Image 1 (cartoon, rainbow, N blue to C red):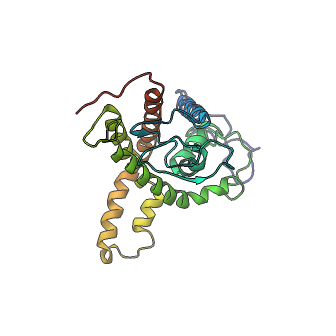
Image 2 (cartoon, rainbow, N blue to C red):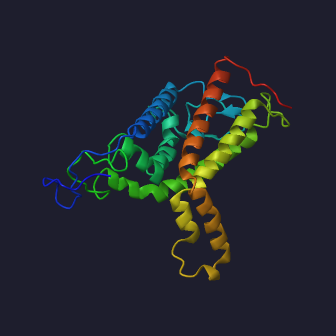
Image 3 (cartoon, rainbow, N blue to C red):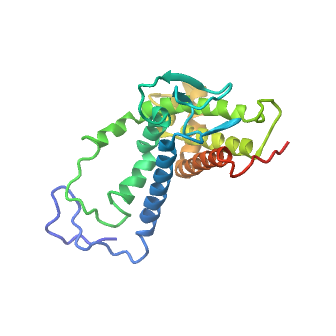
Length: 267
């Protein structure tokens, strides 16, 4: 709890005399969040710009799927539609990563995570912000967070593509069905977490039950809204779990493609 004795506080903001009265390690959570996000951003940037080792039959890295550039490695029966020609000067991953990245960057949980960890707005409960003014999300670039619902629709489409990739993982390296390797299991866990995170989004919850004045007249939407609401309560955990699983899937494909490991067959 902070005192309210300061007389030089900006207009419209709480008067906080002391920086804070907390004696616990309140800085640990935002610092850990910042380090974890920076680690993932660094790894994902390296993989996205490497433009190599993102396919090891029958697995394709979720960072590159669907692969829409002519420069994509051959992916037999995979989602390689070559919609972007030789004029595209960047990595094939950058064609599609903008959508899941935009979805996560505008997500309510990730807003809280990077607001507190990188912008100290605020860094923790009961700790004053270092900023003298606050404009909310009414100005550029934060006003772009209002596009979250549209990124949700795009991410749902990408989740469908990743589901297709997961099904293709039940083939062996010669594309014969009836195979299940460690990679198959890893991709199965990943797609479950990706869908759980996507469906636990507040935009999805609003799509299920928003703008309804009477739930009794819409029993199906009410059941869907109730189910999604249960997922939404775990949105933070699902955000981190799905982020880790995406990174692990990409790392696994990279290790297979570079012949560091082989894919142990379960049956």
